[in-house]
Every structure is written in C-alpha cells, then in structure tokens.
Image (tube, rainbow, N blue to C red):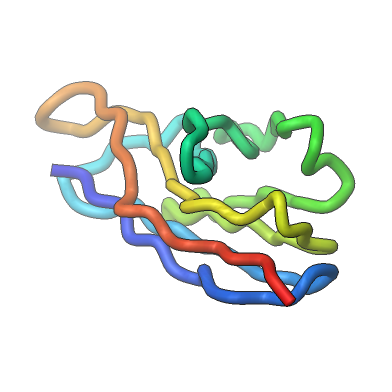
Length: 121
C-alpha cells in the first residue's frame, strides 16, 4: 500500500516561512503522476492549496499565489511546499495528496496524515 509521510509544519509568526515536504513510498509505485497540498482550517472545508504534475505544471489557490511555491523531485516521489509571507489565515492542517499507478495494484489516490501549520504572534 502506498503511504505518504509529511514533515515541516509548526508555529511561525506572521510574515515568516515554513517548508513542508511529503514523500510517497511503498506499494510498488510505478509512477506518481500528480502531487499536491490541501489544507483544512477549523470549521471549513478542505481546499486545494497547490498541485504539481509530473511534467512540472502547477496550480495554486489564488490567495497563496506569489507567496507559496510547490516543487517536486520525481526520482524521490517527494513534493515540497515553500510557504513565505505567512498570514494568520494560512493556519490549518495541511495534507499531502498523491495520485499515480502501482505495478501490482493499479491506480492510487492517497493522503498523508496531515501536519499542523499555525501562524500567530
């Protein structure tokens, strides 16, 4: 079974930066076609923050454009989210998502356990 392991969340002051990382492993991964980050704040629905395809095409939530940058290392099945100029409204649990194909069990669409990002003075 494919598993995602996230790291990099924490507490930061407004205007600060954090970098999240997420690695997909296991399940005889053949290819990870798309990786992304979502977030969910208390009382709100989960929303897409940023996504990157294997060919490098990206998509961002409007409110993070110019502040966040998503990148990936295909060989390591790892995705990163550099978050700059953080605001209190960025506070949420951030979840990694990966979509792809395994050699043995067909397609997958997996989520990480979530990492807390808190922006507060």
